[in-house]
Image (cartoon, rainbow over all chains, first blue to last red; front, side):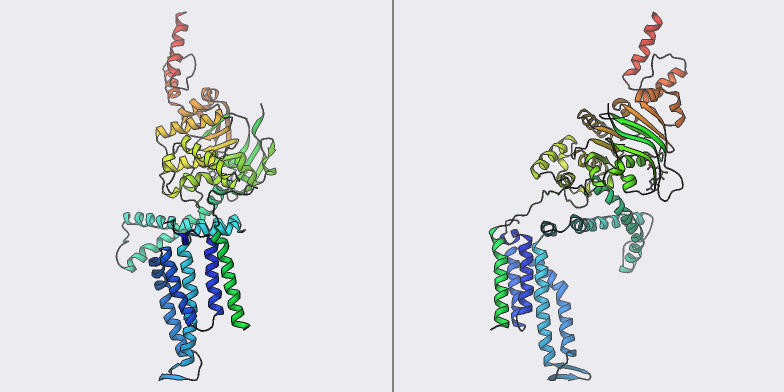
Length: 247
Length: 286
Ligand SMILES: Nc1ncnc2c1ncn2[C@@H]1O[C@H](COP(=O)(O)OP(=O)(O)OP(=O)(O)O)[C@@H](O)[C@H]1O
Ligand SMILES: [Mg+2]
């Protein structure tokens, strides 16, 4: 899987690409251009071999929001040209236009970020941030949170199991499950608070605050592509700005 | 001989507790010695370890009186980060000793070396070596969160000894291990001693202490009540007072003595019992 050229790009390159899309969408006029970006992202996702997860998340996370925003704009954006009317509800042409513009931008930017996180391991991204100066403590917080979430889920399961053996109903309707889950929160939260002190000592015992520059087994390398692409992105953005505002 | 760890009249009280957990403790451990701390639950062994490592008072606040001197320097003159390289500390609870940022055992063990800024090539060599030493090579690709208690204990020990500290403070490293695992850990500790490390070990397994350790510190309700070479401490009649287990063979020997069988000396290792009995017979023949 790691053979893929797109996936192998440096996390920063992928991140610059996301920012690039962001800039392009904001600079370009109208919605057609912004909507056109989405198929391009799908194409990239396909080439990177992550199209299925990508589309899945876009549909789950974005589509309802987009429809909601569009409907709101359609009815409530101020305008003159009423196309359709029913009681106090009026659909205005300006509303449709603005709705399309807004949704096209949110779709392009949102899906660009989703694509970024589909194509980049968070671990790699954090490492690349560390390389450009994120303090180790910040990196630690992000990475440990990621690791601890599954660990907490495991713990919650253990507590639930323990309650089951004491005869607490833990299966059935949402209501029953919620009733069983809520009491697990107290031990869970308490144990993770107690955990932070112990964790700080653990880190200290592993020389976390040693007054030297840390090394890392995990190294990211930059290819020629990684050097060239950001320049291409920058040039395109500058070109767009010139075209849009100066010609 | 130079003192590596030197405590002078050390007393300590945790911030929220009313009573001192350590009461006027003084002792001195020479470089290269293997010292075992024994005592019943709650007697202050772990707190004493925390003091040697500098977590008291750098981390646990509260009132610390007296002087703790590590390698000729007062603990308060070290920065917390500097002590990490000097004093390796393996905790009593193996379940908390995971960095939480590494997803396999190899990287977990390497973590301390990364923090010390050791070059990557050297890290790899050292981690390989330690994994072999602690017999956890087969765990190298496993997630540190998905290990059994005994496996975690080994990983915790490996993660510390890989950093090659001069002083090793090890708090009950075998509580989760089977007898063979325990024996292996003691062999590793012996090896560390051969490499010149100064070792402080908290342990309840007296047979192994008798076999491996040089000196004993006996803790009782926050006081250091006895100290000295292992054999002398076990042989001292005062030891019985503190209700701490003897090595099995010593227990038997004491019962033999009570029932009137003379012994030439008090054995602390299994293989000494015959010797202790024989020599009296020889003495009787003469
Ligand atoms: N963080 C803390 N805050 C307050 N009191 C503490 C803390 N840790 C330990 N104590 C108290 O200090 C005393 C000594 O505890 P310590 O953990 O040093 O004992 P121990 O000899 O290591 O016991 P064990 O054999 O059970 O590990 C106990 O009475 C305990 O309640
Ligand atoms: Mg303890």
